[in-house]
Length: 339
Image: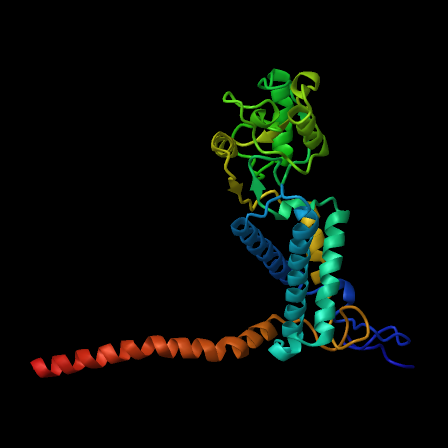
């Protein structure tokens, strides 16, 4: 009678696609992959938002969420996916990719797939591409999702404040995503844009809101329009005290004030991280997902890092140690001279 297969023997003789010592559902290395992918995703989004901040591209710029926002989420997803792929390679083979390998056509194609897949999953999970952009405090912010009707230029009443508190705790400030402190009912469009200031001037126009654009045209361009057409309908958005103070200054001097945000994280960001999971097992050496003779080993990652950065670190250490040794020699000579 044939004996029982040993622990490392392959099972499912017809398929031969996994081993008992590392089944595919084990997903060894998943915490490390998720951590690295999250860092790559978040770092890329921060870099994209910082670039938009200095280029003055905000969530209020027409078509920016549908173009720059999609590009930012896609690039962050591609960075997360490729980071997961490089980690899998290092953990299973003990070496990282060279610059020449990164430029190979199939790697570029895989990065493009991660770009599209991450953006689609982000949108499917309820994400909005405008959250990748900074906010201009004169317009609805990057987190402007839900609001309540406003009673003209008046402040929110007690019932409306309770609704705003609930929105603020759930969604945060519509400009920066903060949930700290007490919320303020932010008029959108602002009172100066909807009704005009005391000096007769009006605030900037939100070109993303067709109703506001048509209303401004009818009231300002059509003869007698200010008397014939009512001001645009306003809504209250939850806003933090810091953004409210910045908005007051921006509206008073009619100047753009941009707010960066690194909060407001929610479940939709998982869509951008999932591309990294699909690369787990790419270098296992088997025919199935996550299966093969090459197991995931953390010591291989340390070895790959040592081989990649060891010479550089040795050079830095040598450069730092050289002046220290020179100073020690000078000190020794001075002591001998004194003696």
